[in-house]
Length: 63
Image: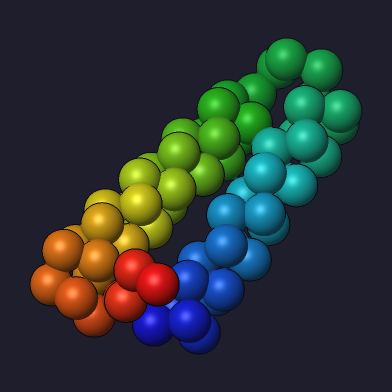
């Protein structure tokens, strides 16, 4: 589970970085920044839901 969470966090950071790059490069002429941020939000929600389910079924111990 730790490897999955770390991998997903790295992908989220990559998506955030690519959105920043597209924001600086495209000057508002493209929708690539919006797509990158949408992917980041979707991945963040997936990570949150997986962590909540894992906690609920006691796969991740609370303390």
